[in-house]
Amino acid sequence: MTQHDVERTALRGRMVGRVDAAQAGTTVRLTGWVHRRRDLGGLLFVDLRDRSGLLQVSFGPDWTEADSLAVAQKLGAEDVVLVEGNVELRPEGARNPELATGDVELKAVRLERLSKARTPAIPVYRAPEDELPAEELRLRHRVLDLRRPELQRALALRHALVLATRNYMDGLGFMEVETPILTKPTPEGARDYLVPSRVHKGEFYALPQSPQIYKQILMVAGYDRYFQIARCFRDEDLRADRQPEFTQIDVEASFVAPDDILGWMEGLMARLADVAGYTAPLPFPRLTWAEAMERYGSDRPDLRFGLEIRDWTEVTSDVDSGILSGAVAAGGRVRGILLEGGARLSRKEIDELDAEAKAAGTPGLLWGKRTDEGVSGPLGRFLSDGHVERMGLAVGDLVIMAAGPDRVTSAGLSAARDAAARLLAVPRTTEHAWAWVTEFPVFEEHEGVLSPGHHPFVMPHPDDLHLLDTDPVRMRGQAYDMVYNGSELGSGSIRVHEPGLQRKILRVLGLSDEEIDFKFGFLLEALAAGAPPHGGIALGMDRIVQRFVGAGSLRDVIAFPKTTAARALFEGAPTPLKDHDLADLGIRIAGRRESS
Image 1: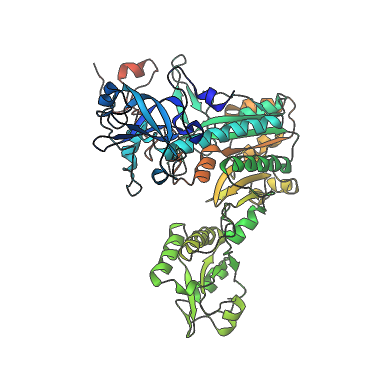
Image 2: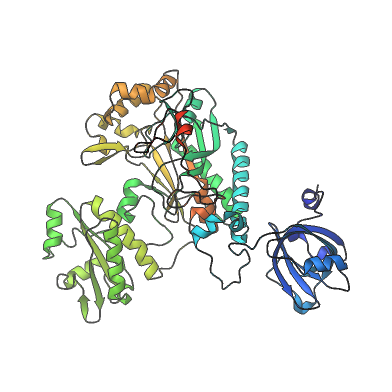
């Protein structure tokens, strides 16, 4: 069966974008939307559009039926039409190299308007110089916005990536298993979306933040290799790279070590990159979490450029600065970045670096700019020729520093690093930088309270198990993140498969045995049935598509996204319900007056 056979339907002979010079001299029947109409008096031209592309259709009294010509003269933007005619080569000077169909046109013989569209609230056709309408307006009229070629290409790529994922995982012997959407509330780092039960009033389901526990149970049940293109839900504040409902490539396997998962996922990314027209060089570099934080100040470093963070505590130990010496005396360090050629940055641009660091939680940056006259800036009066030499600060360079504990300085230096790369247009060694960050801490501590570094099911590093009773914050986990161009694409780990160790970890997190049994009893029961060592990962499909198409927001790669206020503007969700609707669920809105 050919592509043409697949495209043929009762009304359509082929898709618009598939018409080319090979069909010159043939008669075809096409359907689509009126993208643009140009009336030149005796001749009329219509750009006909479907999701495969555009084709110029010409109408004229010498070749178009009179009734059809009359209809064509009244066509409006986004009318849906059926047109039959002859494919002809365009004259050499009239060809359009920017269109796949630009060598030909359809000389219309017959036209039928299948549907008349009202005047579009937002334009689908835009000249190259035209700006997009405001995003909220586009989301309100999403049915029109989805006709834009950019969105259609993004969703077409998404389809191709999902299909490639399924084929790749099937080739490795993985089985796709659907897990429940209505499930039990569990603490996974974000708030659950809760669904009230009508049958069991006062009780609630939760929409899954991930299939984490279910996929572990599948491993205990002997399914060995599982994957799912999974829908997940998290009730959290939104950003450009977050949505309340999202899709992930969810993977779990038994009798594996981290190298197995990382190798499979590298192969998957190479396959997906190939579909998108890129190359993913294998193997991906690997950094431990401690190394990534030391060198880049971030657990998702952008490795397309250098600008590594350096430890200058020793180099500046004799600098007569109360800020530096005070920070070191309090147990902190002096760290910074050498920006080659950075002296060309203006004071305003240096202030921008400082502002980025402060926004990330660092109190501020110290800086020094070396010119032929010496070192200027806040560090100018402190740095001797010896300091300058040991730091490698050449004429034309800029150094930025932060002093204090790593938990305070790392994020600020990372933010300043990214901003400096942009302001200095630092050359990139590659356009596509994948990496693995491994050995994340099992626990995080904030104001004396422990929380999971990833989630509470991460298997500790075997060399650190002895720290669980004495110094759990120092425990490394067998956890790993996939990073691409400074963005986390996915996160995974080897899981705890021993029920006793899992209970102990939950106790360290402050849960009582009663809470453990209530929240995780069904998982512990499953593990007690004989659990194999297992592990997995979840990759964000939305983020992968967003990065591959270069979209500024996840909303540009999801058919029907939510706004940053978590609203679906086109369909009008969420929406208030009347009291009698809620009564069936045993719910009453606090503060609302009873309605009659």
